[in-house]
Amino acid sequence: MPHVAKSEETRSLIVTTAMRLFTENGYDRTTMRAIAAGAGVSVGNAYYYFSSKEQLIQGFYDEIARRHLGEARARIGGETAFAARLKTVLLCWLDIAEPYHRFGTQFFVNAADPESPLSPFSDDSSAAREASIGLMREVVDGSDVKLDPELREQLPELLWLYQMGVVLFWVHDRSRGQKRSRMLVERSVPLLARLAALSRLRMFRPVSREIVDLIQDLAKKD
Amino acid sequence: MPHVAKSEETRSLIVTTAMRLFTENGYDRTTMRAIAAGAGVSVGNAYYYFSSKEQLIQGFYDEIARRHLGEARARIGGETAFAARLKTVLLCWLDIAEPYHRFGTQFFVNAADPESPLSPFSDDSSAAREASIGLMREVVDGSDVKLDPELREQLPELLWLYQMGVVLFWVHDRSRGQKRSRMLVERSVPLLARLAALSRLRMFRPVSREIVDLIQDLAKKD
DNA sequence: GTCTATAACGCGATAGAC
DNA sequence: GTCTATCGCGTTATAGAC
Image (tube, rainbow over all chains, first blue to last red; front, side, top):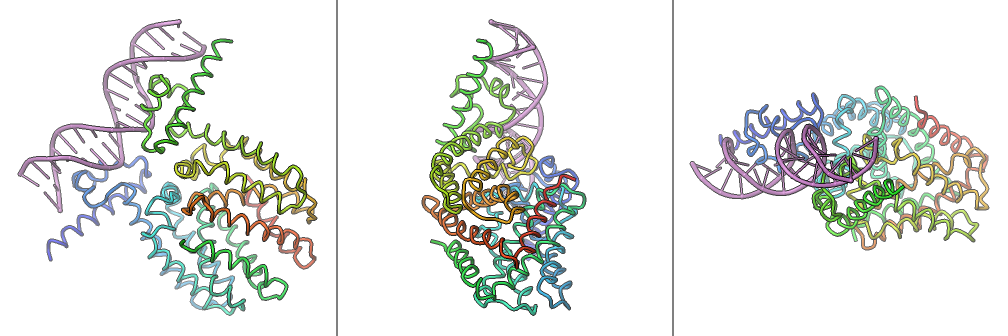
């Protein structure tokens, strides 16, 4: 199929060029005209492949997510402590995303739009979201943590939400090398682990059950 | 000062017109040309008063915040229970913001941009932020809740952050009348109140202290 | 110095020919 | 699938009125 191959090549060329220019000059200062020119195609052609400038960002997300999944899995290999596994996964994300922080913020702002397909909560993002939640499930299942079974089942999704919170903080983080985001992870993960462990104490069952129930009810589609 | 009065009148006319058109047609579909025409001024004039289209949103925020402060204070008047006071304040915000939910999301998306002066964390927003935190302080101080003193001092700011979380949820809330957001408030407030009360138990001191310390450290400006 | 109006620029996006 | 031409809108430059 030389036909398909050609078009895939063009598509890939456009997205590669876009990411390079975004990295060099920032999102706003990179025009569609410049992307098209850099890729050696016309503006109309670029729009044939990508319905909007925003759409070009999706490739960027996918790339970061893909590398995070691989790298994080490699790093948590031998570890069995829950807190250590979780911390490793989150710090790994910060490591991978760091080079893109400058212009990455622009991207995640677009993602905050609930209408946008780029939103992490959108249907279009469900594949990536499921993959990330799957990684969190590995964090839990590969650890020796003891948990209230009901909490255990819900925990991967909760941890993904927590990760979204870390990303939100990271976007607003102006410290050098985003060291504040690192501090957030280093210190909030042990707290979370302690709270999760407390969920087994009898006196906390009602509280932890209500938290789990609430989140389940909030997630219902109706 | 007829001079100042005139200009204030023009400014107010522009922002009122903008808010009306935003409500009627949405943010994106309302052009600066339409706003200027609707207010009976030139486009250049609109830009004399507001440096950008985004800037017009600030008036919108201020209006919602102003009404929320007044209305919430009136509603919590007789109440002394901490959870009830907090719940009232948050539900009051949902009541006031409801008519604007459709296009309000667009606004809060802009606010998610850390670079934007509209961000609730920005210097430009500090006055509004302080006022909101002040309201939360009244929620705490006017209640009979017993708290670890260190937590008590930090709590208003934490509650403001919690409110920002509720707003974030609200923006993504597609349920009728945003009833999911209401459920979130109805059920998470009692949980929060229980957790806050637990902070007085000896065995939780370390955890609650670490939470307070962490937030303080994260908020440091360096 | 305070305020207003017109024209034009730049960029995201689209229409329509080939 | 690809191009050229063009539109619509946020924004700015500029020139002047009170």
